[in-house]
Image (cartoon, rainbow, N blue to C red; front, top):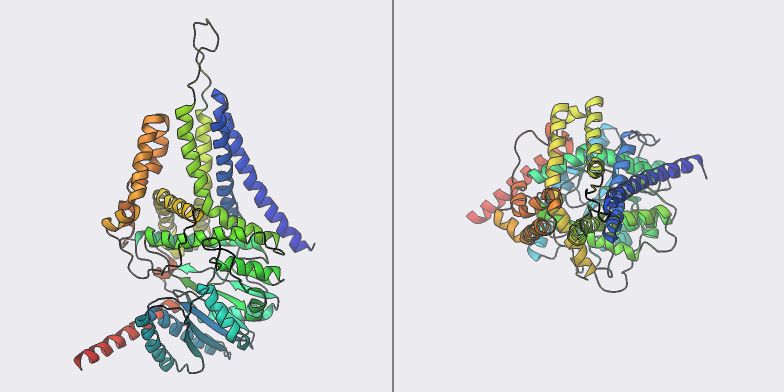
Length: 592
């Protein structure tokens, strides 16, 4: 084992050990708390649930600590080297508005051209739109705007469009179809989502890094969320820009050469992808059978199995995406991810996979079943208060004075503080470091970044019980055999009325009311403890509606708002020009 590999496994082992230490510490502390009246099956069950849940929270906290203790650094390569490879930018689309998707490609092509001219570099970058659109009207609009795109960018022979008659395999099948038919014409393929944007200079540097390391099969960037407008969206946008780089740094340190693939804003070596990443349909019907939904994790594992390096270069900037604007759209997307990750239970035991790849699958599965452990802990606590006998204050017969057991409240409070600390402390530490090293200046200054951190913690705490219920429902649906399919993403304004929120979450409100009533009746001692969980559930329709509204003010400011990246400004200009041209065309047609 090389020194680098030994250090990597030492880091992974330390992270696992620290997480286990936190989990078992919470387990022992809870057993001590429950032992005041004698341990019973409820105490042991709750202690096990606390162990699992705390271990999961600690794993995220340890990842943040690793990210805080290291800095993102570029690999060794020549950033000015000539580029001899051919790259194709792939944008799969599925019932998307082509005005927005195609204008993104126009902006990226202009950005690549400008970056190449600035460095006096000849590049060979093509763009391919891979349409799985089922709506014929949208498809005709795609064809019209593609013609405009080719004309404007003088892209004949560089821009390509094709629409599949059968969208078998969804996005993974769409990309596989292109790789099979046309992949041999290119050295690298940059895979995007319909809402992706990347700086031309970033694309060129990715190609240089791929050329510099012949064993590099996939290079993943860290996309930043941009253009959020609602309270919910802006909080996620701030989190992605302020917290995610630290967590991603910790992830990159632990992943090593067996890194992640998030399905977009990543460059692959087409030969490696073609040789390694064929995805057969799983036996049986969905949700556990059929085509692989969360294909990106599987493709990363298959590349690593074949000996290719899969790497997250978290130092790369200029990679952007958009996110959901409300809780309902987030839950719909999360439902698809939930089914895909639980489907990995069929893949985790596949022969030849790296141990770390199996561990990544286990993490993805755990991310969606973790809410069940918290829910189980709450239900078990209510049951324990209901069915457990009260303490015996007269253990000695004929003894006239009662015996009061020593209070264990301090241990219970300490346990609660420790668990919440695993959620809060990493983010507060990130805010502290940002103030110290000047990173907070890009977020409006240290004070504004700190208040945004507190605001994000508050909002995420209020939303957490609602998101927990949506996630729990998703897991139950998958386990019961319900196929969620692949719904179209909602773009643009995500504002929801109170009625919309009620239709989406009435069942959460009902569960919250029944849950708090049952706690008040059967376990009144837990009522105040469970109020921060039950009250947001009861108010779920209000939270969904309020957080979907446009957010003004200075909270949750991010660098892309204070100083927009060149590609964002360029896309805004292209989009405005295209929109004006389409409006003029429509007016001319109407007048005729």
